[in-house]
Amino acid sequence: MKFVDRKNELETLNRLYNKNGSSMVIIYGRRRVGKTALIQEFIQNKPSVYFLASQEKEDQNQKEFQNLIASFSQQSILNVAEGLRWDDLFRMLIETKTDGKKILVIDEFQYLCQSNKAFPSIMQRIWDNIMEPDRNIMLMLCGSYIRMMESETLSYTSPLYGRRDAQIKLGPIPFLYYQDFMPEKNEAELIEYYSITGGIPYYIKAFQGSDDIFSAIETNILSQHSILFAEPYFLLQNEVREIGSFFSIIKTIAAGERRVSGIASRSGVAQSSIQKYMETLIQLELVGRRVPVTETNPEKSKKSLYYIKDHFLAFWFRYVFPSRASLERGKTGEAMQRIRQTFIENHVSFVYEDICTEKLWQLSEEGKLGFLLNRVGHWWNKHEEIDLVGLGEDNHSIIFGECKYTKRPIGPSVLRDLERKASLVPWNAKDRKESFVLFSPSGYTQSLKTIAQARDDVLLI
Image (cartoon, rainbow, N blue to C red; front, side, top):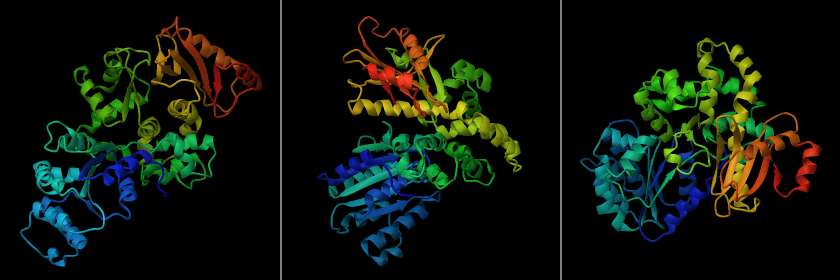
């Protein structure tokens, strides 16, 4: 699979590589998100050592690192040398002459921390006394256990705290780049593929070359031997202990419960403990928290609603988890029937709102809205909900958006209803400039196009 996007990340890495002096970068993110691909893209044609730590004991990892240093320094005697410490191996790396700055990548750094809880302190000593003073090396510490990487490299209590020059929490690839992965698909097809793979390169690769979305789902997810059949278990097992409780919470949100009190009640998790679980899922970027975009103090707002942020996880808990008993017997028919009947309405339409959010930010950055957005999100009260609201706080501009993933072109009634709901939003009600944007992959009726052409406050996407 060809390398796509990651422009900002590569720009950051190259800037640090080209600066005078040494640098330390922390790269972390969930499994399958493409950390190794980013690293390999960056280090090609540069003098580098790539060390992939394993879950073996520390001495086995050290021996593997020693062999890599022997090869890099072209000192074969190192392969059989005994009694060396980590400090000795790092010093040999530093002493190796190269054309250009050296790069050392330690991938799956958390395994070294697991095998020896003092390893962050060892790494701190090596950085302070051997690597940083050399001024000709770039150290990249990478890992897939989000919580452990944050605690062992980024938190105030970590021995490595304050030594990094940058940290990259690698996220999914935006929908904007999906055409690069699947050039043969039209936009509607790309939206459906994105609604399952969610910008995770490993998932995208599994779905590439498939004839249609439903055959791809059956092959790659529903089959009990497929690579994604049990993916959520692997995703959570290294991050949390009580997988059962987390599964119950995610299942409850997938079923439509969005308020924390309802999530606690329906999942069977004690009200006193639910917030701790929610905070963990948010930290792992599997679940998200929303408040109305117009809230002045969102962190303290009591209007919170929760949703499954990871698109694959949302699909899996809606369709795979409830059918796992029959799927484990190799029976996919019932699950496939449910997916074919409700896939668009119950899954794709919700993901489409995220795609539209991404597009609205892009329009703002390209200057096509007439103002710059400061915030974009949802808005709701007890009776009404608006898919997208964007705020331009500098000049009191506000844009209201509706996202309609339907098979037929949409007409003026959608715009009229959006205007009605917009009048209910109190934000700067007496002093604001309003505009409206509609999103529809199936287009618009001629009557709605005529209205939009006559108005400068209506945008059809």
